[in-house]
Length: 397
Figure (cartoon, rainbow, N blue to C red):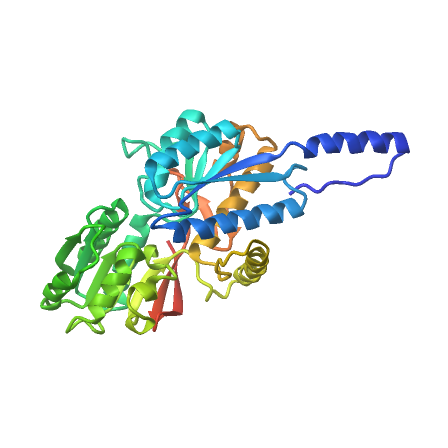
């Protein structure tokens, strides 16, 4: 960022300069955050909000962007599309330069038309569904929507290749949430790639989002000849499935693999205890096990920031950054860089600068945008043993 130069002048000139600076400081750069802060998936929205706030605090302490402080305006969409749209409209009325969020694909898809019609970009840290950055024709790129994460087709293929090679599986069972676009796309991509690798999907079991008892399905699955179970879902359902699978005869040690939605502190609890979460693998965007020096610095800074905020506000947010925290932190700094490069708060110029942003070195890796505003970057394949990440393998695009 550009540094403010302090020069000594005569008293009259100094007073004039101070007056001008005071007027400039009164004008902030407003950035919106439209996140899932309550409801079923608040576990994804809250850490992203914390990371946004941390990034804003850091940039402001460093002098802001082009001499202006950054103001973060946050609204809770409660994982409700109607609220997400209303929030986006309010943020536009608030005069934000850009919107960060949402954390999930469904909410980001809902606000995409608002971003386009208002010409205020939205930048999701973690919306992985391939439709997120596309128009309704699913071929044209929405010029006002960007993402900082890899997309589901990429992680679906990563997981299928891992099952075929590292686990040497030739037969798989797929479990899919019929009420989730995230789940359905991942199940499709995994199955297509697994078959392309020479494997066979012996069964695909569909369940409803509200289901909590999977014992009948798992008992039937256990009678089949297969080597790996792919659960294409968030932890809310996947945790229950893992726990019940481990209590099903014949599935006590079956490898279970899943997407980035597995990354949730509640996974072990949902599974009925950490001892149930063995031989479980998932793809993700970031790992604290990484040996990257930038990651170590981020982890330490995040802990310091969150501990201070918890003490100040009486909150109890985890001071261990998750993939959601890291993605949000990178998205915020990529946006800061775009505003700085644009040297303007004009929404069109900021959008253009973000699209033109060269390779960005973040805590989640090296990030570039493809023609559809998808982040091109690596993935981590994490293994859980007794509910704890014991290895993280970096997989390049």
